[in-house]
Length: 124
Length: 217
Image 1 (spheres, each protein chain N blue to C red):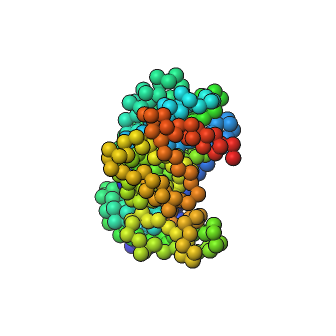
Image 2: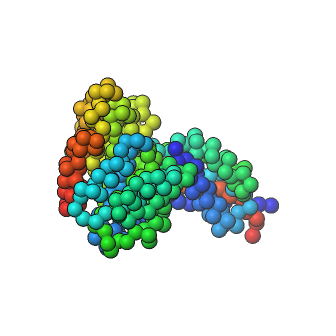
Image 3: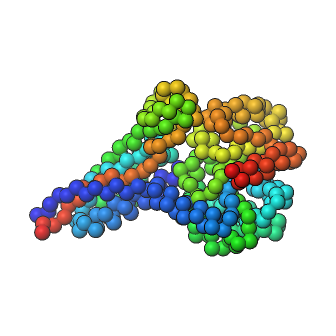
């Protein structure tokens, strides 16, 4: 639901990094979105296409990658990935894959990261 | 000719909020202010609950009224003679640490013991945004239907206290409030759940005790 403001933040980071590196054009942007971030990657991609018009990223290919959920179980001590593909929620409940307990600490999967960009710049 | 270069950016959009949230909390701690973030759907009773807490709790309370248009709720709090700041989000569906930071200068921190932040009515977006509060209270009402907990698991996973409000009308709307309590515990086994009817003044004393206990721990 807050894809617009988050996307504006993503684009700001892309453009400032591109400009710092003297880019004439941004050709590709890789964005990582956690499976537990309440952001729909398809909507973010759509808004990046719209918001990047009239910027040096206007022709960029926006690639969305997924950050898996990682947890620490407070019950059995399991540390690692917790897949939630079997659940029908987009914003899913997470439980320990080993002991099925829900008393867990989520250690990864909530972030939204601009991973890297590919730019064109003039030859030195 | 142009050359193509790959730049590693690694810019975490969420971390910017977390950093500001930590800064907000440091300010609360330096002033011995206990901050509570009230989240819940539109019409769940967040404003009424905060009004009742102002009237019945020991200690001075300040309020940040967050809403798309905040003047309506802010006006209600002002009638209780406490410091109030309205925080308009305009088109945004949640408060974030940056918006909260902006209004903290208008709160007399040295004169309050508690800062209550009423978040925008929404069970989805506030999940991702830590404001720097010490405690998050999720307020829902039976009129939202007894499947509302199941449909919004993440907000309940992030809750320090859950309030199921308007239990006086549960029969009228055909809702089993016990199912809602069980659903919360299915998602977050350790969280305290309190059933309230603000209209019939049921459960308010338990809410006050829960906040005071959380503050002292």
